[in-house]
Image (cartoon, rainbow, N blue to C red):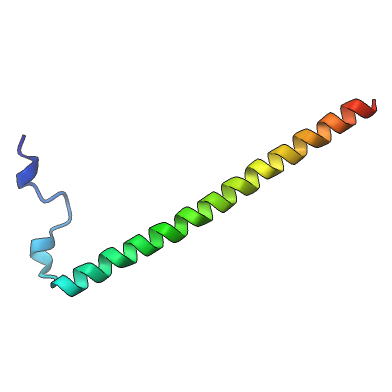
Length: 65
């Protein structure tokens, strides 16, 4: 009910940050989030590719027997 009156832990008013610094901080956060998202997708694709390759190897071994 009183969430609008709480700071949420950021305390932007107490930081006395100007508009330029705040915009730079938000931009930096957005860039780092984007980079980390792309790295996460790459690693996820790599894991699924390894799982697929292992399952295909198992199927080939079973067919050979």
